[in-house]
Length: 338
Image 1: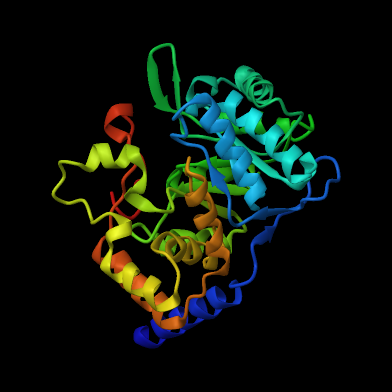
Image 2: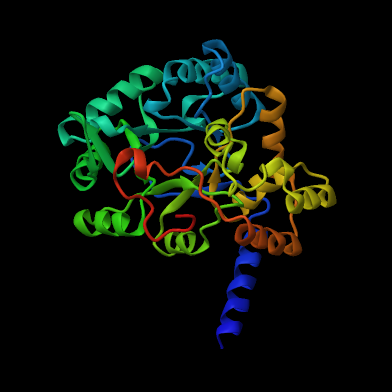
C-alpha cells in the first residue's frame, strides 16, 4: 500500500509539473487598489549580491525588464535598493511598461522587527526604490536584531505587518526563511496566513514535503538561489567544504538533461522550479545570462527528466544558507539539509 501511495503521489506531481509547462503566473487574492497584475510571475529577477557597481546594478535590472521579466525581488539588507529603483524606472520606460505591469517584492530587515518600526521599514524601502507601493513585503527572517541582541521574534512583527495592507503601501505580505514550527505558530497566533513564503530551494534542496504543505495551505512559495551554489556567497563559504556538491553548472545529471532537451543547465534548473509552481528568482549582472535564464520559460522537460531530477535531490541534498550559528538562534528545524 505504501508503495502504491508513493507511485500515485509521484504521478500526481509529474502531471502537475507538466501541466505548468506553459504557465508563468500564479493567481493570488486581491488586496489594495485594482491594478493590472493580479498574479505573481513564476520567473523573477533577483538582486541579492547584485553589487558589481551602481550603474551595473541599474543596467541589469533595466535589462531584465526589457528582456521580459515582470517580477523583481529586492531587500533592504542587500544595500542596493536605490540602484535597483533606478533600474526599474529605466526598464519601465524603455520597455514601455506601467508600474502596475510589474511585480515588485522587498523585505523587512531584522533591525525593524519592533512593531512601532515596521511601517518605517517599509517607508524607507519605498523611498529607496522610488515607488508608491510594493506588490509583496516579506519578513526577511523570523529573528529580531536590535540593541545588540539577536532573538527569535516574529508574532508581534507580523501583527504590525498585517496593518500595512490597509495603508495601500503593499498589496500582499509574507515571510521568508521560516521553519514549520515558526510558521504554524505565526498562523495560530494571528489567524492571518502569509500569501507567500520565500525560501532556499533548488535541485539540491527540493524540500518536497514542505512544499506540499504550502500547497495544501494556500501559501505560494518563492525559491531563492534557484541555481544552488552558483551564488557567489555560497562559493566562498563552500570552497573548503568536502561535503559541498558539484557546482550546478557541472552537475552530470542536469548536463545530460540539458543536452537532450537542447536547453542550458540553468534553464533546466529554473524550468524544474517553475514546473513545481514556485516562483524562481535567478540573478545575473550579465545581459547574456539574464536572457539565457529567461529562456527557461521555453525549455521543455519530460517525465523521465523529472524522475532524474528527483534523484539529484536525494544524491546531493545540501542547504547552503543557514546562519543559525552566527545568529545564535536555531533555524530551519525539522527541514531538509539541516
